[in-house]
Every structure is written in structure tokens, then in C-alpha cells.
Figure 1 (cartoon, rainbow, N blue to C red):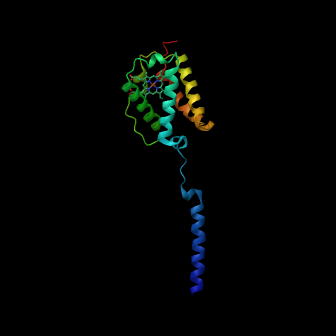
Figure 2 (figure 1 turned 120 degrees about the horizontal axis):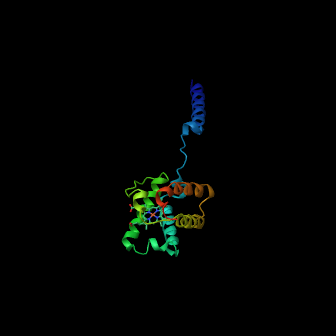
Figure 3 (figure 1 turned 180 degrees about the vertical axis):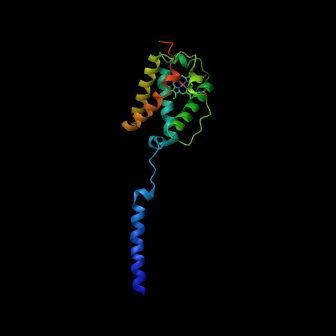
Length: 153
Ligand code: HEM
């Protein structure tokens, strides 16, 4: 009887191990872009570097030079939160939508292209892998229509 019990316990262990190893049952969720980028601090660092590059550029600096330090901090924080939200992170974005917050600034297609160039530089600076870079750039590209003003060439 003891032998039978041992035999059954052995089989139960083998079956359990097999079930746990099965990807369908383990329910491994694919990692969000947020997690693959390295989470909140990584996104904050990317935002700071990106803003720094834009502010230093002679063509783009016109958008930032009139802002108080507090307004810059506010825009920076809201951008971090928006990126966190857009990439599947745990943040709730409480800022204005992209059209409302950029309308009237006169951001041209050339300004946009420059900002994308700086974003690529930032992503390369942090050695973000090609796949994640592509996903970030795609998400940002989706905001272009709301940020760039067609009336400005
Ligand atoms: C050429 C490109 C861009 C320029 C020159 C630009 C410039 C600015 C400026 C000057 C502000 C501050 C407005 C204020 O305080 O009144 C701002 C706000 C903001 N920007 Fe941009 N921006 C650009 C692209 C983007 C992109 C690609 C994103 C993210 C997808 C973004 C996200 C934000 C957010 C979240 C705010 C704060 C919104 C709010 O006040 O509720 N911006 N931007």
C-alpha cells in the first residue's frame, strides 16, 4: 500500500511540474513597452534628456524660453506621466490633450522633424533597443497630427 502511495505521489509531482511548465497555464503576460523601457525612472530620464536637447536647439528654444521654471517642471512632469500612460504603465494622465495644449504655438513640420531627431538621439544615448525605439517613435508619431499646425509651413 505504501509503495502504491509513493508511486501515485511521484506521478502527481510529474504531472504538476508539466502543467506549471506549460506556457498556456503559466499565463506569462507579454511585458509592456513601459516595463521594457525600464519603468518610470527610465521614462523620466528619457524625458529630461529629450527636453534638454530641444531647449538647447536654436530653432526649438523659442517654445521654451518664455516659460517659468515651474511651467517647465509642470510640462516635464505631465510628459513623463503621458509617456508612462501611453506605454502601458500604471500612470493616469491628468494633463490636457495634445491638441489643446499645443494649439497656437505654431509648431511647424520642420520643428516636428527636429524634435523627432532629438528623440532618436535620446533613445540612442540610453541604448534603447531597436524594437523599443520603433514602438516609442510610432506612439509619438500618432500625436503629430494634433501637435503640428498645418497652417504653419
Ligand atoms: C516640436 C515638438 C514639441 C514642442 C515644441 C512642444 C512644446 C511644448 C511646450 C512649450 C509646452 C508647455 C506649454 C505650457 O506650459 O503652456 C508643452 C506642453 C506639453 N507637451 Fe509638448 N511639445 C512638443 C511635442 C510634444 C510631444 C511629442 C509630446 C508627447 C507625446 C508632448 C507632450 C506635452 C505635454 C504632456 C504637455 C503638458 C500639457 C498640459 O499642459 O496639460 N509634447 N509642449
